[in-house]
Length: 285
Image 1 (cartoon, rainbow, N blue to C red):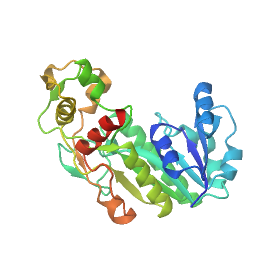
Image 2 (image 1 turned 45 degrees about the horizontal axis):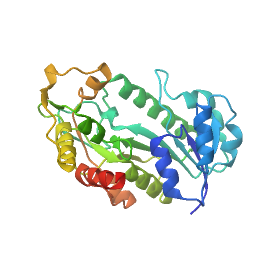
Image 3 (image 1 turned 180 degrees about the vertical axis):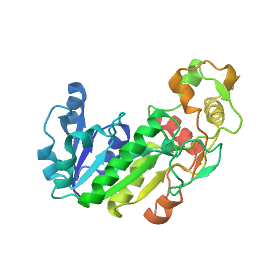
């Protein structure tokens, strides 16, 4: 299968999908920065600077669209500027919107799935709910073949705990009943590619691995793999953190991933953080 993917806000996850699709696909990526546009071109992609350049010509050619641009208080800035052009794009077979499992809010360590009511407690989560609603409203009025992917915490090459553990700056922050779900970026690409191969407009998918775990367990595993001492424990109430870091601890939940397996036939490459971290260390040499 081949096509033309317009990647709106071409970032870490979208780049993994582009690699997964391979050279037979035409990939057009948007970015805010000229230096990143130049890098995308060196990697064999076509690049547009947005906001700035006109997206309509690219939309007129796209068979697939992946939207990764972060929302703001007004929702998705892309839709504010180009909802009509997206709805009128003539060749679209699949549209993917990358959201977050933060839309579910806090469940005190309990399980959530795609049918769980959305009840975000953070500003970022509320913005994502608004953006999801805007995309769904556009799909309802235009027939846009929309798919929403709620991503758990993303890790992968360049995004792992090893650097902090090696530097001795990692801390195991302990809070009772604190669970996070995670997903390796290669598995995000697998899920997106599986959905492209098996479109189901209107579908919503949780993208998470099989093993939601306390964050301190991940740091302990990283230290074990490196053969280094365990990072020190710090009670949550005593930990010095930025407001952003502290906000990640405001919600605790475990995310079910049955739908990506059942409906898309996905078999995770890295079903838990242990296999994922071990692979990152091997790949880093």
